[in-house]
Length: 201
Length: 126
Image (cartoon, rainbow over all chains, first blue to last red; front, side, top):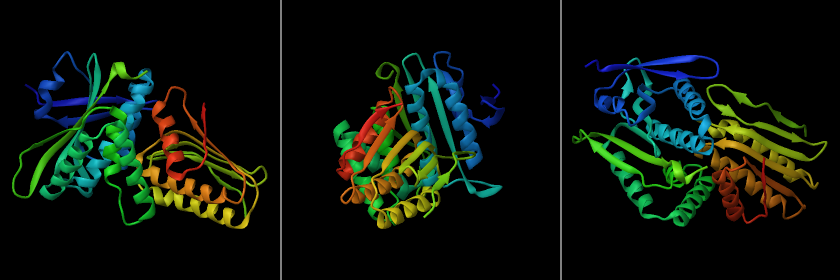
């Protein structure tokens, strides 16, 4: 089986091709019940993020509000890769490496981001996700507002949680946290959430 | 003081259109705010607004008309809201939060800001 694949992103102005090596996702790419909207595994820089974001929005334009949600979640997940990735482009150490994956099934969109992170960061993210997953919608909103107020008042506070809370609020679903390949220093982890089709206009 | 006019920019990152017009006293932020470093863009905006509210005592209309912003921009929007809240204690102002039709998420964001700063904000579809 050819484990390389080319993902085409059509935007309003041009077409971009991403050539990827993705052995871990081949079974998903070949699954006829799930349509891959976007898959990217590689370094992130502003241009790539912008290109993917525009392509994603263009592809999901027909879904209106749902597409807006998927795009918004995608942006927050990519920012999470920027915050935590411990793997970098060997040609440019400023570019973190990660995976983003958006797939569509009959009933939902699923958005995943994955990257290597330090064990310390991983545990912080795990705790954040567990905390967020325990909250109902009203509690999530209060928590987000509280974090936002703190971030606005304290310039040193980065407000790293706000993006994750925003993801939970937008999706109305739990954030699925998974880890793989863990050793004493680093681990590969993924965050996945879902936007169900029947819940939005 | 001079008007603060920043055109909408759509490049690697998208920044909103800023139109703070001293001839009409209608101030508007419109478009999308999709930024990596929000402080670079918003600091001149909040500095301008802070100077205005410190020196003027004129009624204003302030329109937020976002089609999208990322969570990094939320902090800067809250900062603007807080400056407006302070100004509203000495001058009658109108603050409008425009949200795209059917976008309940952005409507709720407006309601959240209203709750956080405890200032009346009119929610309007566009």
